Length: 104
Image (cartoon, rainbow, N blue to C red; front, side, top):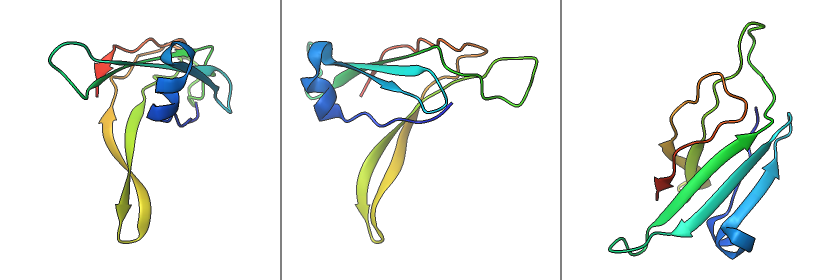
């Protein structure tokens, strides 16, 4: 399906705290972020959804099973690299996935 990069600071400054990015292979990925309320200071709530995503599975009989991963950019001995910190649930056979809101 493809990949895109959303920057937290840019998301927080965007209108409605939402950005949309086009996937190279077709479709769009939406990210919305907001500050968590209450006792969870320094935490954010992230909501992701896809729209009109292209089926990239090899099977002619089914649709793709999309998921997303969150990665943190870290400095390491070899320079800066990305470290996966979260992987969403897989949404089975859905090219318009709407993932659960999560707290980061």
